[in-house]
Structure formats: structure tokens, C-alpha cells
Length: 333
Ligand code: NAD
Ligand code: LMR
Image (cartoon, rainbow, N blue to C red; front, side, top):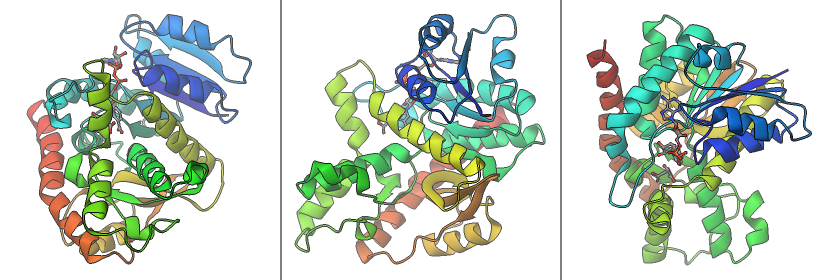
């Protein structure tokens, strides 16, 4: 029995993500919450002949509390998306408050749920959720995740494209580490399950790294003011949610990159800091999942000099983004 909750369920990501969760036999109850339109989205989804019982709530009459009651996993795609010319950090002003409010609800009503944060800027919104949980005395670093799966999905797709075989795309895995914005997104192409051609170096390599780091901008530009990635994000969010649920159900050996607090695995977190060469509180790294959430933060392993440089370049922005999130919750106390 798994109750999944989507906060921001009527939005561009929220609706297709809710559809994918409803379509899965892993979910037996689906709670939808938004400040608009959730009763309609819930009524619509509830006609699909799959096991999950669907309910949708709005803020009045304790809607958030009703949605979160009994939640095992809460996915948060609530908040504003980018328009052309904006960075993810430009969203902080609005989204920080939204995420703080929702995190307060989760910490109060469902403190043991797995929390999957999609709202941008992820590098700062995850620290906000963590600080709220700490404030309520319910912080468990093993259960709070920043969703960076879309970077992994993009990297896999682009590598399959370069290999000239889209049929391979579902099997290609490329670890992407660091954070979720611009230069903080670090693809470890040398660890791709399907190696790139040996002459894929220099400008070709740089262009692929850039495309993975700025893949979000490609979609924002193409949508031309109508928002950012929604459908690919819903796919990626559902994929990650299913991994968390399967691990909760006892499936072994599930590993996925996610932006986590580095105390989630004391030994692994400390070792990772040494590998990165910086005392960061958070990092997206391949984490092994189990019934209680993070079991182990895996090391980066063997990486190339070029990848080491990418990590060095990611650290200053990551550190700043993390501090911005932490400072916000201190200010609003
Ligand atoms: P959207 O505007 O289409 O949907 C957002 C939804 O959030 C809306 O339905 C809105 O009503 C709702 N909302 C606003 N305040 C709320 C609150 N207090 N409580 C509940 N719901 C609330 O935006 P979108 O395209 O779905 O994007 C949502 C967020 O996800 C953005 O911040 C975007 O940048 C981010 N995003 C992250 C990734 C990632 O890889 N992590 C990928 C794509 C988008
Ligand atoms: C993405 O990577 O597509 C998202 O973070 C949305 C964005 O603003 O680019």
C-alpha cells in the first residue's frame, strides 16, 4: 500500500506526473494538492481503471493536511517556471516561500514521508525543506531528495543520439552529479554505460557537456514564454519516484543520482566531500536506495581530468545556492 502525493498537481509538471503515478500499479492512493483546479484533475484521473484511489484538494478546509495525511511519498513540483532570459535562481524569490510553506505542512502531517523536491532552484529549495524539517525536529537526511533525474535522462538521450541509435536510449546510463543548474550539472561521460567514440573529444565533448548543462534552456527557449520542461520532467520525476517506492518495497540494488544532504550516509558523505575537495553540505551523487531511503552515497569513482575540472567549476555556485536556501529559512524564522 503506497500513498503518493503531488503538491502542485494542477501544473504543467503536476498533471502529467499525476497521470504517470495513477498509471502505476505501485501506487494505491494518490493525493493531489494545488491552489487551483485539483478537484477537476482528480475527477479526471479517477476514471482511469488502475488501482490508485484519487483525491484532490485545494487550500480551504485543511486541504493540505487532508492531502498529506498518510502520505508515504510526496513529490513537489509547485512553483513558478522560467521564462526566456531567466535563470533558475530568478525563481527563488517566489518559489522559496512556496516550498517553505509546503515543507512545513509535510513536517507537521507526514514527517516520515519521502520528500522529492522538483521546484527550482533545486540547489536552494532542498536546503529549505531540510531546514524546515530541522526546525520541527523531524529531519532525516535519508528521506529528502532533490530530483535531478531529468539531467540523467537528457544525458542518456543525447549520448544515444550521438551513437546514432535512439533504440539504445532507454539502456544508456550516464551518471550526472553536482547540482541542478548550469555549471553545477556535471555529466560523468567517461562512465557512460555506452562509451562515446574515442575521437569524441575537444569541441565535440565540450558541446555535449554544455548541452546537458543547459538542456533546460533549450526547452525554455522553444516554449517561448510558455514555461519550461514539463513532460520530460514528469517522466523523470515518475521514474525517480518509482525507484524510491520499489526500494521501499524491498527491491535491492536500486541506484539513482539525487541531490541529498551529505549526512544521509555519514561514511559515504564524508568520503564524497574528500573526492569533491570541498566541504559541501549537499551534492547530487549516485545514491543506493533502500526501505528507509538512502542506504549509501556512492563515490564518484574514477573520473577524468576534464570531469575533475567540471566539478571544481561547480563548487562555488553550488556552495552559494546552498547557503541561499539555508539563509532564507533563518531569515523567515
Ligand atoms: P506550472 O506553473 O505549470 O505549475 C506549477 C503549479 O504549482 C501551478 O499549478 C500552481 O498553481 C502550483 N502552486 C503554486 N503555489 C502553490 C502552493 N503554495 N501550493 C501548491 N501548489 C502551488 O510550473 P511547472 O512547469 O509545473 O514547473 C514547476 C516547478 O518545477 C518550477 O519551479 C520549475 O522550474 C521546476 N522544474 C524543475 C525541474 C527539475 O529538473 N527539478 C524540471 C522542470 C521544472
Ligand atoms: C530543467 O532542467 O528543464 C528545469 O530545471 C526547468 C528549467 O528551468 O530549465
